[in-house]
Amino acid sequence: MSWFWFAFLTSLFWALGGVLIKPAYKYFSEGQIYAFNGLSFFLIWLVFALLTGNSVTCPINYQLILPLLSPLSFLFFVYSLKNAKPSIISALIAASPLVTTGLSIIFLGESINSLQLGIIILLVVVLIKLGLTEYKANDKQEWKGFLLGLVCSMAFGISNAVNKFAVSQIGPVSFSVINGVYMIVISIIWLVSSQKITPRSWQGLVKPIGKQGLFGSLIYGFGGFFFFLGLQSGPASLVTTITNLNVPFTMILAGLILKGTTTKTQRILIFLTFLLTTGLVLF
Image (cartoon, rainbow, N blue to C red; front, side, top):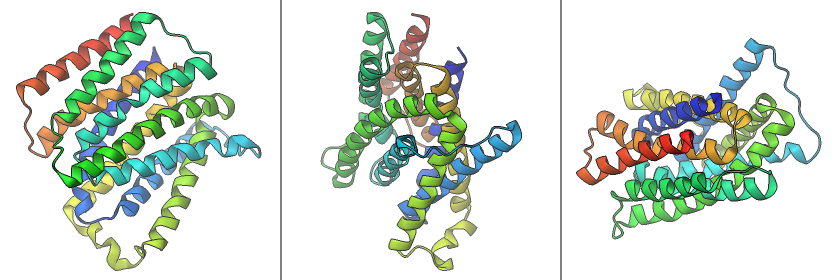
């Protein structure tokens, strides 16, 4: 059951990191936020490899391409986060375990019972409803974020199934280090093309909110660290579903940090989320 605790920590760290990063968009572009996250993720895994004595191997076949899907999915996520509330984007991504579950059963040979499948479907519905309680269809910016969130959901669903296969083939350390390298390369291309490489473009780092965003990126990177450890030891269908707890955690932390409020309906849905997650683990 170590995979459960890794998945649980993933949801908590992703929620906290996302909430801390959101205000930093005032001073940084999407490309800069992506660069912060890519560098944090790479350094965390590199330090872990050095401390544990794990060797990093670089495959020279198709396996070298597999880690690229995750950075591309995160690329969509970072861009979407600027165009909608964090809880809304997280809610739309909550549908991704349905895609991951289907692909894992068909291609990876995973198996879940009918009760677990029913709980996963119900949990996804509750999570989407929870996040979309803040959605306003007449808000042009949130409408754009809504559509991007749907793209993120499909992208994450596919990439997580591929990630499970890749991690089982080359190990979480090598996979994640290669993943981090891809993120850094994408960051450099993005920053150069958007002309965000001058010292003036990084003045936000001296602002308290800018430092908060940088810290949030580090926290988010640790979420990714726990996620791939969980994906190594547990079924992708259940690990990705448990990580969806980041939706209620995001809403709770956004209320505490960003001074938001929750309605009675949202509190009921949050309770149902934790109740269904408990049932998924027990059954």
